[in-house]
Image (cartoon, rainbow, N blue to C red; front, side, top):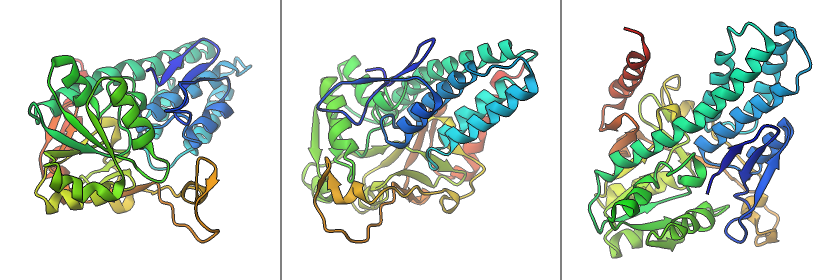
Length: 349
């Protein structure tokens, strides 16, 4: 179930557009293939987008026919900006690309820079697997055997290097013999919950029940939902969280039913440069995603508003689960300290 894999001459991705009908892997052979795969949601999920973009930049750099470092950096910046234009909301995309740019800032030759880019992209993927497992362990500590937990979209193994973020506790619970019942919202308009989360969890042997998005309130009441856990595409400095459209509605419902509402995300998803959720750009996508299902028109040709994400205000979030631990409240003060600990741990003594 590897979402992204690096090869010497190309990148292989799991085509998430083909699921659940077909498990299909695509070869991305150039930067245009990578850009298209991200835009068309063949690869999706903030961490997976970041990994794919990183590999895409490394792949593009291998084709540069120059020994001049200045020319190399000019080409690299051009391709970095091109990949950054693929999707605006998920901050992992920009974080991964900028991490690669920084990794070669002091390269002494073009060959060294090309090798470094590949190494750095591979490191991002390896680190993400460890990060996701730690997020899952922290999240699992919040739940008890038999809990019924609601989620939306797909923040799982196919959206990351492994395990996922919001779905990580379900995978780890299965490994440990703990029973967690997942309730997956279908996630209109492109059905990531129905097509991807339901498929991923059922493949892993996790008990999963699929509901339509407008069944959430009734399900919370009738099925005694224990908690809601979601992923994130960008978290502002005050804790406001951008995630797949419909997340904000779940947070409001959770508040009404006094159900804990958790966000699970790596530090790379936290953007301290954005003070509040109002500063986060919200991607709007083609109206055909709403007016069509599987290429079949279901609505007349009318105006369509199709934001891909919404922002959940921090006051509706019970806790933010990261690889460094769980932050409860006062996010504006506590979130920056997570980065201070990372910096301290990597600073020579």
